[in-house]
Structure formats: C-alpha cells, structure tokens
Image (cartoon, rainbow, N blue to C red; front, side, top):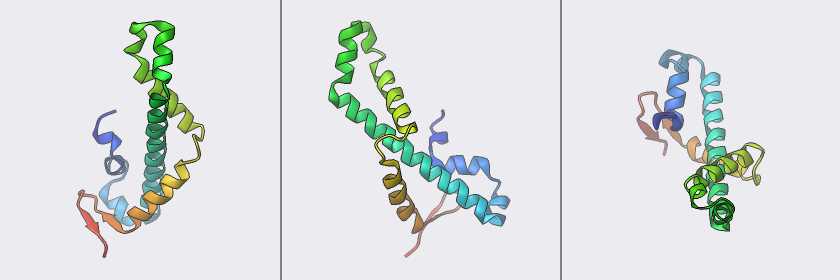
Length: 119
C-alpha cells in the first residue's frame, strides 16, 4: 500500500470522478463514511498493537524462537492486532468513528485537497 492510499481523501479521490462527486452526494457521503469507518478500525488496530507490544508479547515470542524470530515479531504483532480489530476488537471502533464523524462534520474537504473549516 502506498502512502497516498492510506490517506482517506486520496482513496476517495481514486474512487470518484470530480463530476460524480458533485452530482451524487449520497455516493460521496457513503464513501466518506466508509473511509471514516476504515480509519477508526485502523486506529483501533494500531491501539491494540501498541498494547500487545507493551504487554510483553514480543519478548515472549522471541524466547520461544530465538533472536532470529525477533526480526519478525513486530510484523506478527501488527497482523495479530489487525485481525483482532477486524473481528470487532475491544469495541473502540464505534467510539473512534463517532469522534471522527463529529470532527469531519465541521470540515469540508474539496476534491482538490483544500480544507475549508466551517465556522
């Protein structure tokens, strides 16, 4: 995944032509909502990953397989955290989504990438 694909606005721009964005607000809103939900899930996965790293899971994995395994421990923990988040995680995705939705409600991002904050 490229850096730009991880940015919700870039994903949105890749899926919609500028004309269809203006003509079909429902479609644009559903794409924006899907991107907010994906960002919330990704944030929960990152949160779970940090919890697992600080819980000592990495050290436990290295003890079982030696130092060679240590090089891949972060990848394993990251994937494990993503799988947990995909399966519902700790239930934080909805909280993160609601917060992102509130923050984005007051912002309008044009297709050219400029950000207009509504006052």
